[in-house]
Length: 114
Image (cartoon, rainbow, N blue to C red; front, side):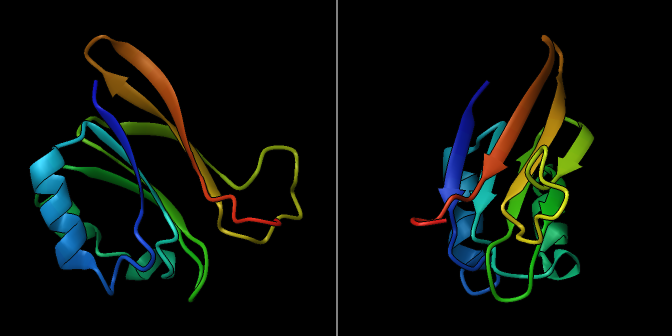
């Protein structure tokens, strides 16, 4: 399985660049950080058209993380485990159901000093 991570620094501003990277790199799973858009503003349709399932935790103008997978994403968990007061969209994890078995993958955005 090919797993990649990409700090996109605003997925909406760089959607064409990010889509081109997906076509070239063809990861099975990608962890995106700093998507910088609300969950419902994430361009999921473009990634779904490429065969990816999407799990997104967005936040307006800041932070934001996502998991994209060629396989179904299950048991998605949002926010840092053990910190129910966390309001920052910096952590998402999910179970990727692969033909070889399930694997839990997390995407975290940990900016310097935070």
